[in-house]
Image (cartoon, rainbow, N blue to C red; front, side, top):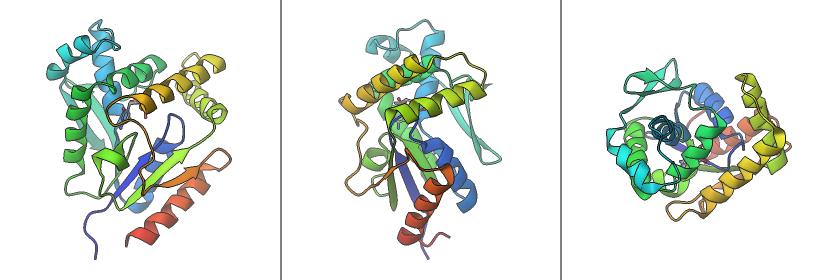
Length: 226
Ligand code: DC
């Protein structure tokens, strides 16, 4: 018998993390924790206050008053600020860019990581983000680093934007993804990188099903979950 298990999934924007994590969570009865949503929520709050997310002192000023609640509804993570459901409102390009900005700030990361570790206590989880295997859950039994070519990732992001009826332009989406990756990989605190003990999967030419199968195979090897 094994106790609670943790599956960490890291990788750049659009590599398929949240899509596959949600499916695997459902199939294996794990709690899915989307850490990007937390950074996005901080960004949304600051944007609404008129703060410049690139300016550390402006973000830090608001950080203590941000009242985030993460609730699981039928296995789906919902996120609230001061009781308002902002789950859908954080899915814009502007908020994604703001999330990458605020994610570079040490104090923001401390608060988010604390929240993430608390959410994973006493539960079997699959958590996706940028620093899960390297920093948030260094003892996770399973660590996956998902990757994909930038063209493919931009296509996927455009698909998501289309789904929610948002306006987009392929070239600008691609450029934003490149900038976001650069920002996430080069920040001083817990940058995006593959953990030494993570398994890297390139999803460029794989279907969602294929990626899920590969990950489930790895989970099977490393834990007693079936
Ligand atoms: O996964 P996402 O696109 O929702 O993440 C948005 C941004 O949040 C990402 O570009 C960087 C930041 N982030 C982070 O710094 N650390 C995490 N664990 C997750 C997200």
